[in-house]
Image 1 (cartoon, rainbow, N blue to C red):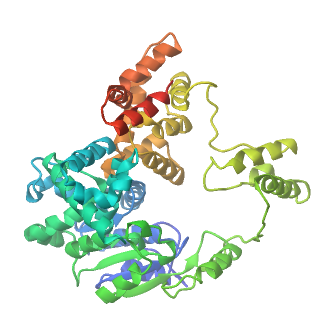
Image 2 (image 1 turned 135 degrees about the horizontal axis):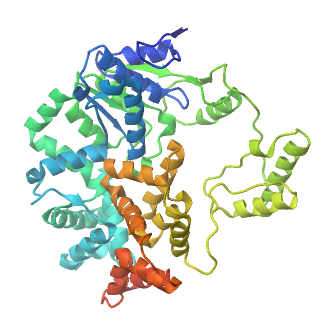
Image 3 (image 1 turned 180 degrees about the vertical axis):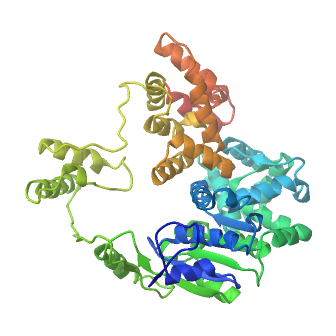
Amino acid sequence: MAIPPGAGSPEFLFTDQQRKVIEHTDGALLVAAGPGTGKTRVIVERIASLVERQIATPDEILALTFGGGAVTELRHRVVLRLHEQSGPITFSTFHSLGFRLLRQHHEVLGYPTPPRFITTRDQVELIRRTLKTMDNTIATPISRILEHRFGAQLIADEITRLHERSSHSADPEIRKALDAIGTEYHTLRRQASLIDHAAMVPEAVTLLERKTELAHTLQQQFKFVIVDEYQDTSINQERLLELLAPAPAPLMVVGDDDQSIYAFRGTTPENLQAFAERRNASRIDLNENWRCGSSIQNAASALIAHNTDRLDKAIRSHPSTRTGSIEWMEFEGLHSHARGLAEVIDDEIRINQRACGDIAVLWRTLSHPLAALLLDQLIQLNIPAHIASEHHYSVGLPPAIAALITLQTSGLDPIDDSALGTILESVLSGANPMFGQRAQREAHRLDQSLEETIASLAAEDPAYQPLADTVEAVRRLSKASADSIQGFIYAVWLEFPALREAARDLSSEDIETATQARRTIGAFN
């Protein structure tokens, strides 16, 4: 049975289980929400219900989730739902909240000034400075790593993981060495008023533990705390939640242990069950999938049932969803794989009268060699096909330079997403390519421009600021006048600091620095 929504809410109905979540106000609540069960819609309506029923004012609500894109989407949907009533509701990621608190109270942890986000380059440089001050006996267990030409970067990455996970290395000697290096690195980092992504949450925890009056103020302010994707919370994020909303505060967490994907940073599928036991939480299951038919849902359920330590739940497809069939195919090698898929598509078109536009082939990354092979096979069968984000660049030019030329000649309103993505993943941005890839996925998911997505992500998470700076550099470069490709590349050289820094580092006495500089410059020869 479905129950009509409250005044002012969307036209569609809510199920009994969804309405229970929306109206819950007493104590902790665990919402086990499978894929396609409408959890975001329910979170939006719960926030609206709290405001419209005057149970909480907007500034008394804190909604936490993972990723700037998710924050932007949630805020947008709440504003659409409540309009002028949305007011100063706090939407944030864990890292953005921690960063904001640390900037406001930087002196508590010894920062001379409000910290700014550290670049990858600065982080590696701090690690190198740290290693030069360390006793050789301390670094002995990791000497083989240090011999690697990117050893400092590897050490920085490992210290980041250890800080974020609060876990222990399998080798106690290696852990001891990393702890010693990490302690000195974090001291130097704070002295320089720099903060890395991994430190934002654990240092926010330390801040609230030391400054208990601040923790109490936040507890009084945020009377209702809602956390999405709780299965992905780390130990430090759970500690931060306990400081923000200790029992018996009405803390609501939403998640699906079957979708836990951050084990590498210390999360486990047992997070949800542990929360329920620790907080003596009520539990409500959202188990109707409105997204896919029974064939897909049943196959997924049968597969995931083999996982251990998961919540006991049963997801079913809503009767209104379209169904179909699933076939498992195996091929020997990429070429036979491409031919086999092409034959399946050909049969669908010729025999089943399926329109070409109704067929899509999905895989994890477009760089997979199967993409080009399948496209060739379809062309041989006279089947029109294209790779959705394919972009043709000028032959013989570095991809990032060709993409910049494409943008300058095609106009910047709006900026072409494919060309911009190529630039963001290149050394021009000075950012980890991972962030550029994440931004592109968020843009596709939210169905909005990459430039708009980056602006939203950077506003919520400082790790994305280098991408926002790159977009601004692209726009400034569009005004550059050059009558030759050499002149244009020189304009690029002037606009993007990554190239200038690499040129300076070519003469560095540090072998690793000079090697990385040659790779960067070589990408534009």
